[in-house]
Length: 362
Image (cartoon, rainbow, N blue to C red; front, side, top):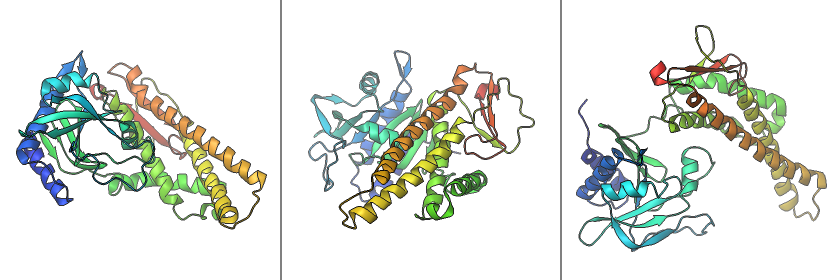
């Protein structure tokens, strides 16, 4: 396989932007931009890796197509008093001051065709949490495209939530491999997801489960999103790791085995809470509000409020479980294999084993 360079990423991204009716800068400008990000990613500042996100935004018209309703947590571009050059030195310095999780650098080109950092974009935290599946929805990002330094020699380019392309060391990635949406990996996962769906359905009863026709798809999305969040959590610590899902624990030699069923139970309870709470809300709106009735039964109101609180608390419990699992390998040394087993581990199905293996210990 031939090596790829920032110029190859620039050519690919420009073609993608033209295809979706965006007006990208020239290929030369994109090449300079991606070269700067790439070389900055090779640096360290205060012994920390470099990480930053930029959005290519026209300062003269940063919001050309605003929505009809501006929500309170929508982004705003905050102008710097003085522009900064977009070069390696500046990005390295800004990486310690501007957290890409919460803010984004607004970049464009000046009258001389030079790349400049002209502002900061706030409220990026909502976009970040959505991208790592910590939230069910996320706001649009400004600009023709966004680019982020993901690691040493790794940059990725997005059009809001869609990956346009990435460069990992010298490998050009032109599209995401959506292994959880179709193919053999998803087929294997469905063997565990189906029993999870059936267990929820039995608990609630078929009539309540079928009040809305999307619960099978919603529970599948929740299950897979949980798995993705664990993988993202492991990746965040930069110590290497993997998850092994198996129908048998025989042959596994874990030095420190750790049974952990709490996430499975929390996912099951969250599914029950969400479906019941949705039913209460639907009844309130369809029967009483849309029906023009003046009085709402107190018990139905209490069921809706208490159910919403229970769902919120259980979702927070799930987040805590995911963070715990993602961090487990980091408390071991780099030659330890950590196995998490349980009769209902992760999704409430039997005989499922999760094995997180340090790369140096595998």
